[in-house]
Length: 378
Image 1 (cartoon, rainbow, N blue to C red):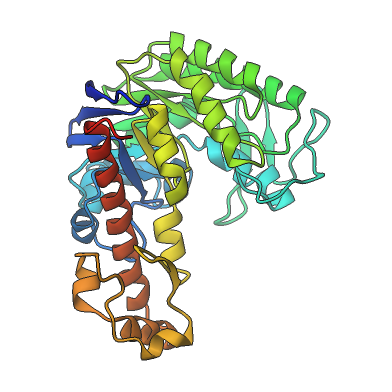
Image 2 (cartoon, helix red, strand yellow):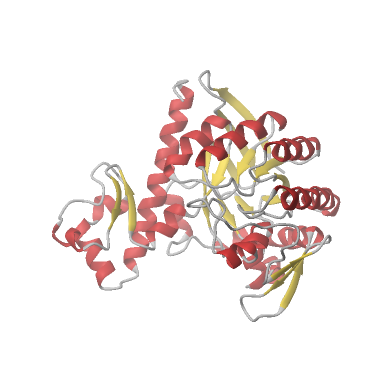
C-alpha cells in the first residue's frame, strides 16, 4: 500500500508539496516519472537512472505482457528485482494502447493534436487493428500478430503479477478527434471497468482510478466526480486534450476539485518542459512523459540555452560542455564536439549521454519548481 501526505500548499496556486510513501521508498512530490516501458529506461542502467535524480518510474503493462510475460516476471521475483530498481514503480493499465494501436495508428495522431484536423471518430467508426467491446479489447500482438484480449480483470491480473507499487485501472484512452457521443459512450465503459478493477484486485498494491472525458467539460466533470467517489488509493488523469495546450489546463482545473485532496493525483503521458509549471500549479502530484528520453535518442538535448540538436555539424567545432550550468555526469565529462561526433559516427554512447543529461535536467527543473512552491512563488 501507499501513504500520501500534503506537507505544504502554495498560497499562490493549487500547487502542493507532498510525501508519497511506497513499499520501495518515499517520493517528494510533485515529481516527474521517468518512462521505463519494457522494464528499462532505454540506454541506461538502473544505477544510472538513479543518478539522474529519478524518484519513480512507470512501465508498460501491455508490452511487458507481450515480453517477457507477467508469469516470467512473477517467477523472477517481481519487476523491481528483475530490473534491479529499488525505488518506486508504477505500471499503466494498457488503456493507452487501446488508442495508440487503434485510432491513433489509423489516423497518425497523438494525444494532443499538433494542428487542427478534419478527422473525426464517431460511434459508427471502428479502429482497424483493435476491437473494443463492452468487456475489454482485442489486440493484434505487434510481436507475432496473434490475437490477445485485455479487459479490466485481465489488466489487474497482469499488473499484480508484474508487482509494481502502483497500478492503474483499465480504461479507454480516446482519440483527440473523437466526437462527444463517442467520448460519452467510451466514458461509460471506462467507469464500469473501474469498478471491475476494484473488485478484481487481490493484492495490497495501490490502485489508481483514471479520469477520462476528453476535451468535453461536462464529461470530465462527470468522470472526476464518479472516479473520485470510488475507493481508489489515488487518481490518474488520462486521455486527450484536443488541439490546444490551453485545453489541458482548463480540464485539470475542472477535474482536480472533485478528487479527494488527501489522495495523490497522476497526470498520464504529458510533461513537455513548457507544460510542467502549469501541471504543478493545478495540484498534480506526479506526471510521466517520454520527452526527455525520446528526444535524446533523436539527438535533442534540453539545456539552459534551450533545445540543442546535437546531430548538427556546427557542434563539431564547439568545445564547450553540453550545458555549462548543468552538473550532471555528461556535462562535466564530455564536450559538445565529442557528443556530435558520436551521433555522426552512429555510436550508441551518444544516446546514453543525452538520455542521462535530459533526465537529470528534467528532474532538476522539477526540483527547482518544488522549491518555488515551498516559497509560495509558484
